[in-house]
Length: 195
View 1 (tube, rainbow, N blue to C red):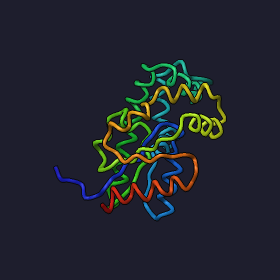
View 2: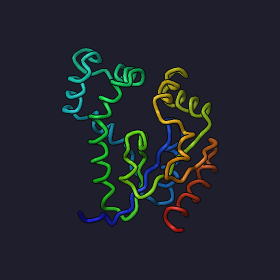
View 3: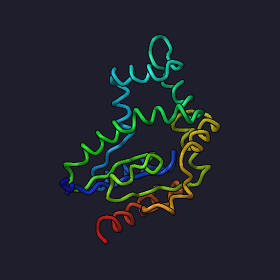
């Protein structure tokens, strides 16, 4: 098998850790950054994907179509349902992502469940963001206009950020200030691209 000449770097971390903000910092530096969340939105816009989900999750159908809110609530409260959704969504998201990254000599991708789904081997490097728990919760509450309890359930469904130290990655501590992400980006780029 021919080895890819492109360098692919994943940006990961739990919900509310600052992946998108970190991606924006890299974009401002002229770097190419993709997003699994954006690809997921594309999938949701495709009728074939919605039909597939409706067949798997009939309890989430409202008015003949799948209710995304009901599905979200279900998967963050039911591990089996979450695994069923991930088995459908993640392989297709990752296939599209890697295909899009391939033409670039260096590119980055925001990958929320990188370690949880075992996709780290697809990348040449990983940047993992960590942020204080309460800041994460309040950030997502404000962004998604949801309750603290709903956000805490989503956080509980993901890998504990404290375990990131066991993984091969560059850790960026995010204290919520833009300058911390700027410094983190400089340090991560030095380690992954220059050093």
